[in-house]
Image (cartoon, rainbow, N blue to C red; front, side, top):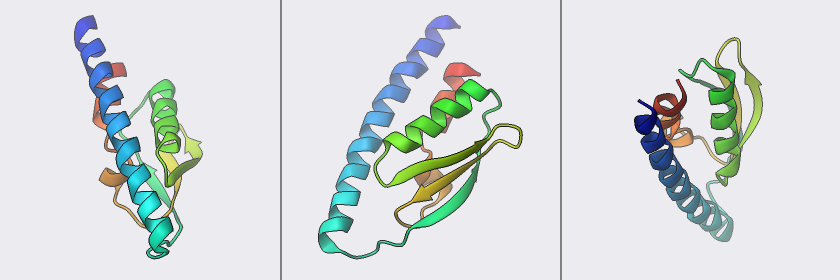
Length: 104
C-alpha cells in the first residue's frame, strides 16, 4: 500500500511537470498572438475530502501558468479558480485522480 502511494506520487509529479510545460506554451502563445484571452473565475468541485489533498490540488493549480486558485472551501469541496480563458474541469485539474490515489 505504501509503495503504491509512492508510485502515484511519482506519477503525479511527472503529470504536474507536463501540465506546467503545456500551460506555459499555451499562455505564451495566447500572449504573443494577443487573442483568445477571456479571464474567468469558475468554481471547481473536487472529489478530494482531506484538507491536505485539497491544499495540494489548489497549489498545483496555482503552479500551472494561466490558472490561479482564489479560494478553497474545504467543507463543500469547492475550489474557486481564476483562469486566463474558459476551460473545462478536466483541463484545469488533470492531476486530481493522482492526488486522490496518493493521499486518500
